Length: 196
Image 1 (spheres, helix red, strand yellow):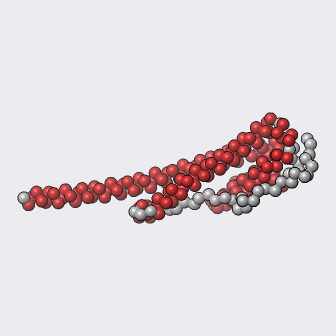
Image 2 (image 1 turned 135 degrees about the vertical axis):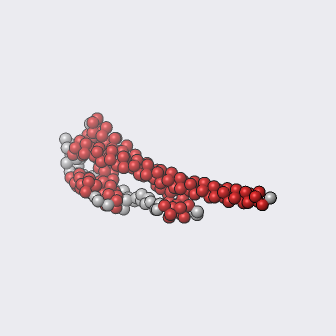
Image 3 (image 1 turned 60 degrees about the horizontal axis):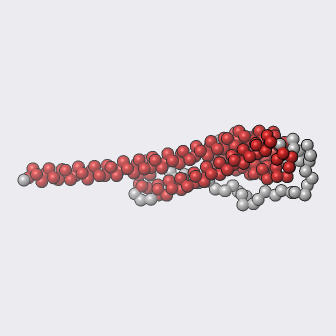
């Protein structure tokens, strides 16, 4: 009888340890899964940004001849691309990407002023591709924010917060609108449009 109660006691302790162990493993694997989703979403943004970055010189070269009076836009694009290449911190990179987005948006709005650009099939195709690239960046950032917000919420909730702190999982930053994004670019339709 004594051996039977000892066996039941040891079995109960073992069962409790197994349940605790499974809970521990489940929490850890859940954190790994959520963090991997954030990294995947981040890489999709980087891929979309790289595609846009590579496409911009083609668009600039194709439109420059038509848009000779828009020197400032082209300088802003060149400066932002240079900052992206020389940025050393994530904050500098984000600021440079924001400046590039703003300059590209202005270029896309200004192309509406130049009907001869729309008539040129090659230029038109590049502009459509750049607009598509801008949309991909926007979608990738929205997807990232959704996944990152879920991850942040998960690592702050109890009891996951204990495991997140134990294993060094930190909150990730969400993408916010660029400074001044609520202001539409100013385009002067009263100026004369140069003819090629």
